[in-house]
Image 1 (cartoon, rainbow, N blue to C red):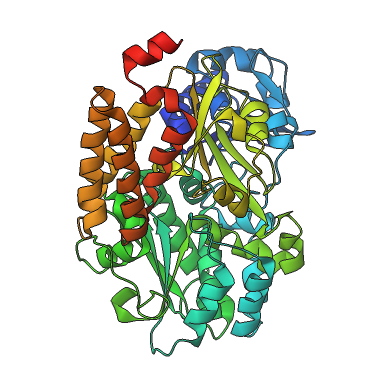
Image 2 (tube, helix red, strand yellow):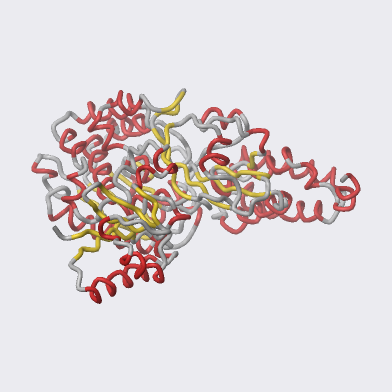
Length: 518
């Protein structure tokens, strides 16, 4: 039996030297005259252990990491191909505590299979959901997704089934499924991991959405900063089309559905659905006023489902295992699992898929292992650059849409960025305003002008100029932006600014006063 060595080709692993490790392994195999197969997979998401090399043994897979090219010869000396002991030994990957504590539904195959091998995908349960969907009435598919409690994983948390029902019911000779893969939030990488590690699950989810709503064409809008995801998705679409998963007769059924990749041009605002639609149409990425909703008049004026990557990638298991199975995970109105992305100044950064309900403290302290610097955690930003900063006093907050909203926060795309006690929260608040000013599409005044005035006002506070009056002005600006902006860019920028002011007031005092107070 030919030995199989698994080496990731995920962007995160590549950035840490995975290609160099693969070349070193190839050279070592040739030098020793060993017949073995190298399979390039996605990542399992344990980035502090990447590149993580796995080998198939008679007792299952055994992992090693983080592997450097200089480790390869000694790994073979230690009988790598049969799972021999080495200083880089990690044991069975599924028994690594970070993985063992997860509930992997959406990411069940990520890091395990060759991303563009359809047979590998099928072997681990792939296409089971689509096979059931082609035999169902469209409204029954919609009802299943609605009953599952799946909500938008892109940040808004809107019930997916309701959006699909709206598009299904909307009149139109042409309808579209648009996947928002413009993953621009800091500390987020779940979309990229799926597209690079298990692209067929996204293709399957989009095909199911098409059958459910009557859409026959899909587009994946991927940010230009993800060249590996673009290449992998295009390769997988070609394979799926060749195998009859896409095309005029999906899996031999009467349903037609095809799709293609479109690449963005680097604008953060195109993560907002209407800006994305404008960009897809070849226009400038500017926010559209609503109504009309995209579900009624979206791409090219036709009824359009716009869903995030993780929302669509969660659909196949719902169709396969049933709504009750998926709904059994989670809490309150937050059902199923959420891929939490742990980043920043943290010891164990990576992707952790779990049912809703873990507390923020559990995620940061137990799963993330605290700060990489060893200093105390000062703040955690949840939900990307527009998310609120939570202090340790709020670490008992459960990871749940409503629980975070009750604390003036938002889960967003479930990215968590950790900061230690050296972080200056005035600087972080200023960054939020500056980010908004740079990335604003310019269409609405509260966002375009409010963010610019916000930077100037926070600079005056930093200089000790009328701090109380300027803090009141920042609060007033944030109120205007929150309720007057056309989209979430201007509307959510107040979350990081006001949370920094509320929870870390000492960082906004004139520096000499703050020093004296200490």
